[in-house]
Structure formats: structure tokens, C-alpha cells
Image (cartoon, rainbow, N blue to C red):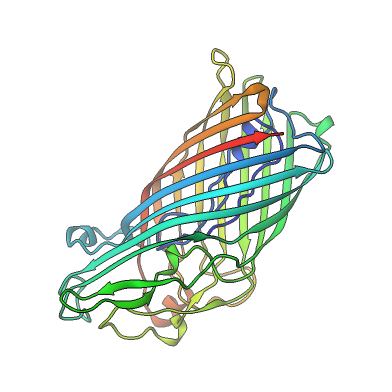
Length: 375
């Protein structure tokens, strides 16, 4: 549905408390059918966590779960889909393993390997979607798992960390390789009473995007008091290719896609986060966070063409969370529960060319957790 791709884990290699927790999970995998794979992060180096020292390593394990089922055209919910049991239901579990090495006080390198477990189910009853629906009910039921697209990134602080303990900006640039499969097939679509057919699963649950991509990130923090700081994170995945070459197939009985949607689009993805962190003085190592998160897929890419089938759109969510630092800052646990407050399935370029506006399913909630160890 809208976002689903594994954006890369743009984890912070610095500041163990807020900072490292904040930039931890980054794989844009947004709200269901819109494809985005970003876990995201929260904060900046706090007063006792500090920057990652040169010559040291940081291992990060991030987890993301979402269940999407609520359909939108633009910002309007399509309630009839649930009422008629015709909604598409995606369940996505994403695990990112990342390893960072701090080369100098300012510069680090990072590698990330994602693993995804996903399922997708739909039921199209006779006449449930209006004209053009086959005379028999259709059931689609996919279950996929696999390694996603591996990424490597270089990161650098704008200012010398030793002279800027209370504020800084980190910029990252890297490469994402098409190591994950983008065309997994199963016996997925069946008409009741007839034999199952072998079909390619929807791109929203495929482990990989099928093209080389360029991840870019910006992360910033500012300490405003002994216990409070504000943060901002921005991530963008550039996909120079127009499509990934995987055919976009229609369910049995439906007409074939028009030429503009004949193949799956290689779409850009983005993530924006901003908020604050407050250190709870009465509980050593505990920080509570709050902010806003926006992630999505644009209709127009920064580089390359915009045709091919994609479900562009974005979701805006409230993002409360907690960060708990242990063992003198060597270990860190974070947890966030995001609640979507606005969702918009914008029109794609093929939509505009064809005079239509497709829909996409979004999640109500996004569950995020992370563990970090420094050595």
C-alpha cells in the first residue's frame, strides 16, 4: 500500500542517550501499502551518554511492526472497504541489524542488514468494488520473508564534538544495494472452488526494492537545559531508476494495467522527525520523548522518471517514547508507539495521466523498539 521499503538504518553513531536512541532505527517502511522502510530515531548526545569515541563500535538491533488496513483516497477514508470486508490487510515485521565504527571524533561508517517478515491478505466479494469486478469472489493470501537491501553509509558531524557538547548536526551519505528479492512468488491468489495460481506478491511486502539507491540523512540536536533537549532527523532515499522491471499484475478477471503502470515504480522515500527529550532525574538512565513523525513516498522522484506503479502518500503521527540507558551508557533500550493523526494517499503521475486517483491502506499504529550496545 503506500510505504513499505526498507529505507536504511540511518542510526546515529554518537551520543548514547538521546542522540543514539533518536537516530537508531531508520528504515522507511511506513504505513502499509505506501512503501517506506524507516524505523527512525530520537534525540542527541545527552549529558552522560556522550559521543561515540574514536576506535569504538556500536551494534544496533531495531524492530518495527505495523498492521495496515484503513484505506484512503487523498485524505478521505474509504469506510466502505471495511464495511464490505474488501480492505487489504498488510502485516509487516522488520528487523534491522546495524554496526557502526567511529573512525575519528567527527566521522564514522555504518552498515545495516534488514530482515523482513510480512503478510498480505485481501478478499474481493462479488460486486464489492463496483463495476469491473469478476463474477466470482477472489482471495489473495501472501506470506513472505527474507533479507532486504543492505546499505553502507558514511556520517560526519558538522562541528567538532569535543567543542560542541550541547548542539551539533550530523550528515550522512551512502549506498543501498539491491540485495533483497523484489519478485517473490507464491500460490497466492485463488478463486474459491478453483485451483490456486502462482503470482508475484505485491511490492508493498517484498523484502527488496530491486534497484540501487542513495540514502541521505541529517540529524540535529540542541540542549536547552540540564534535563531537556530538542532534536530533528531527516532521511531521504534517492532511487535513480524509474522502475525495477517487475511486472505489475492485476487480480484474476481484472483488466491488465495500462502502460504507465505496467511495471513497479522505483520510488523515493523520506522520513522527518522532530521533538524533545526529557531526562527523568528521579530514575537514573530514563528519558521520555515526544514529537511528530512524517514518512512517505513522493509522487515525483528527485532523479529519474516517475512512471510505473506506485502508491505515493504520507502519514503524520504522534511519537511518544522512552529511552533507558544502562551499564554506564554502554547499553541502551528505546521504545516508541506512534499514533497516526493524518494520512494522505496523493495521486501518482500515472494517476494524473489517466484521470484517476488510486487508494492505499495505512496503519493506525506503528510499534518501534531498539537495543544498542557499545564496545
